[in-house]
Length: 248
Image (cartoon, rainbow, N blue to C red; front, side, top):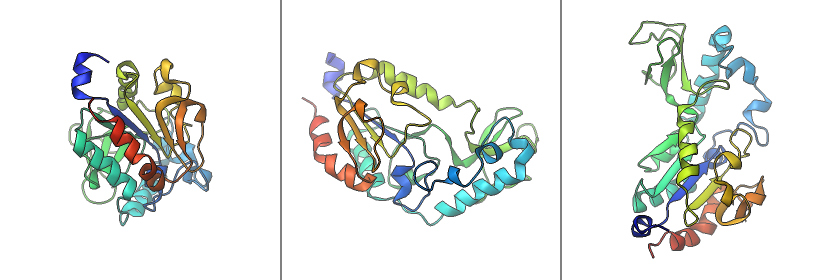
């Protein structure tokens, strides 16, 4: 560890998927009876074809908004938010595939949403991302910069769409040291693989790689596997994380 890193202590990288919010009543997309087993990705989440199905796309994401309206952060969200408040955003990086805001509502100070969010809209004509007005997405929303309507979509990243936040995964690979901690929570690794997140030297049962998932996959990457739901699994490793994050 360098002297600079020694002074600040190890970093904690948390990579979460839909399983983090499942206990808050938000549906998963792939595991179990997930959303993609009932809906067509090509119809409602394909950047190449979404404008042909614009009504269905807006209806689908408005259903997701209504689904999360009464959802509350669960204990797993609260634990992660507490860690970030305790050690700061420089040492605790929360990177999620989720489009909900439950981490922020639990008190997290900064969250990177790899796949966008349900609070913004994107004009695909001029690339302006802007806040949506009101609770739901409106089909008649015009881009405030160029005035386009038909080119405006929900701010969720679709399949085949550029995802600028993925640059943070590459930075993570470059900056992660052997002393840093990595926790994957509630992800099937079908969209983002461990190989694209972890540096090569941490690919084989690294003792500071933690996996929390009731149906764990790609376990060969993790030295600690908790085959539990997010709340139980994080509670189980909380004391170990606190110890490892202490500045030595």
